[in-house]
Length: 143
Image: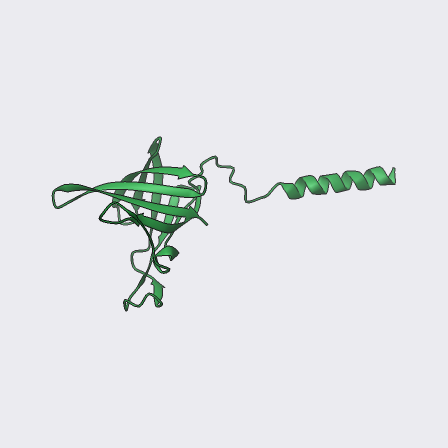
């Protein structure tokens, strides 16, 4: 009987330790922290960011809030990387399959297409510049 009790306790311990409390039960793969990796340059080629720009982080929370932590060099020296004034907060919503809307704290709204492939998030935004439509593609890696 004592062996059965010890075996039962051991099995329960294994069962409870295999269930992680930080599993994403929301079902939405966008929720989490995403670090900037690369974006598209003017020639349409993907270009990896420097060490400072790779510190940029997008955090999407289950309560539909988000935080953007942007980094840059005030002096132009990439070794002097600091959190910069482009950091922001706000809310996010999925408008339809693959269409993301971000509302910044000051009220600006951006919409863009997004896709997730494994641990890679791609966001594509279109905007007007000098009367022409420009497309911007940014790639983030889950942190």
